Image 1 (cartoon, protein in one colour):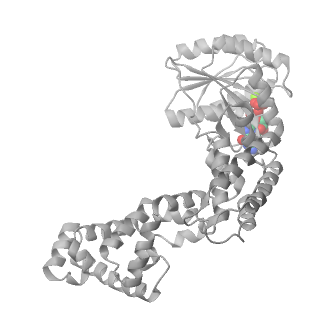
Image 2 (tube, helix red, strand yellow):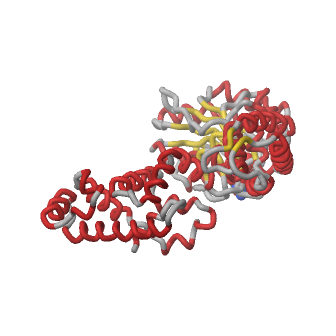
Image 3 (spheres, helix red, strand yellow):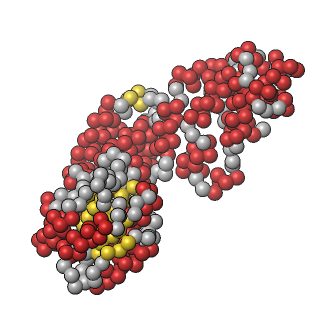
Length: 439
Ligand code: GDP
Ligand code: MG
């Protein structure tokens, strides 16, 4: 994967300081190759590497990130930016029904996406959805929409294959109004290539139903072609957003990467399989991680970066070394770790950890709540000198924290053991809190 290649390329760069021009050159070479291999438009690749190079030149290698990780982080951020921000989803018309027109080549996945979108809108927005069958050129097309539309509980408006698609669209809109539908999705015919007849029909349907949103469905498996198609549609009918279909296949991500840069239109949804629930809002960050091939490791890096203040870490290290670590510090640590989210989900982000191995390793969040409550019920003096905690103090703390004397005892005892372990560890490493607390 690209992330591994980048890290390998830059692994010989050690310590702190800035990336050298040579490092950056090597990294850019890997990126360029990887993107071209993923079938990204070459102009996009060129612009992209320029942007990344500039950012790398200015970047100080700092914090817990090594130079390889630093570059990966920059590349990840820029890839996500290239694909546009987070998908805003569908915007609804203030006067229902919101009309959504589906466009795209034959076989791109329009009819499938029509049903999937209907399902999505029902689930996420509780909308009542109707779909209109305006592909009259292939007999099976109407049946297909009746079938998948029915499966997702959408009302299907169809007139078989004899009527004119523009008339069907107009009629369907009237019915959707009468039936009080929130959304009408108009499925249209596609052709094997972009041609004047196809565009003409779309323009007529657009005039008839005045859609609130036009979605272009493009097949991610077709790579560069998908981008060319999108460019041609952008000129002819000016769509609002893209549904990227078949992202489940061996699509290399090139189409997803280029489409926004080339057409200026965002990818709103990703269709990721033949099942009708395999459809979601497009997440540029996830896509870029997929392209980089690194699980969710990026978000882990980011969370760690955001939450662990370097000065604080140094301070902690000093305290550990001098054995001045108190329950107060412990509380601070606990809070920092918890700010990063549930411990199990954090562990799940580490590639090797995801899946199986996690099942045995459960961190009890409630236990952490209790520990926090107990420490919070102590006076500052008690937090600094836990050896004071005896007799009535113990009872007071137990009451204050809604626990019992035994729990307070345990914590004080465990903390004493932890201090010992830390003393042995001497200097350096951050202790593994979860492990220590399980003792
Ligand atoms: P249309 O001609 O544009 O309406 O395309 P269809 O919706 O009929 O889809 C064409 C084919 O692609 C069908 O066999 C679908 O099952 C399949 N298909 C559509 N979307 C996806 C997807 O996201 N993943 C996969 N694997 N297949 C899809
Ligand atoms: Mg179709």
